[in-house]
Image (cartoon, rainbow, N blue to C red; front, side, top):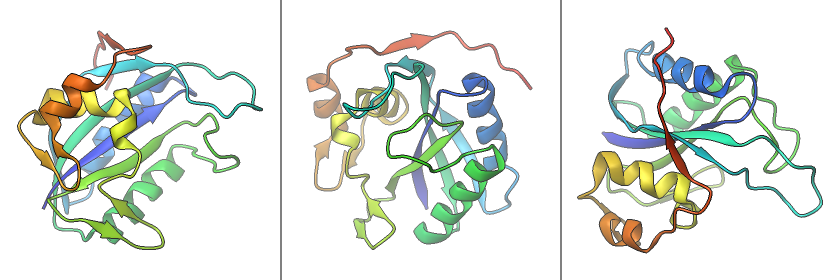
Length: 166
């Protein structure tokens, strides 16, 4: 199955966190990293009563997998945990955030998983990197990615040059 995964980090060397996560995708024989967007810097989304956070580094990856959507979610949670992710507060700072954006053309809604990702249409740090690597796709329930990208602002989002650190 072809899937798209968003990556984000704003703690503990975010560029390294994203690169380490991309490497981890290939450490599982059931996941193949096919393509990665550029890295983007974005302003942190925070709740009104929380302290300011560092900017995020974001990207989107295209992977092929034989894992089910639930198995893939479990694997992503394991990668997050291995990189120090703690789930203390909603929209809190984090070493790594991995979200399944799309799982083929399936629409999935379970207690633990909503695909397509329920908030992706509101997030420029998801739509623009996704368009970069998959501009011609249709998103179930949302329509053409190209149209979403054309309507999406670039406020606070900047493509960055990222030297690969391995």
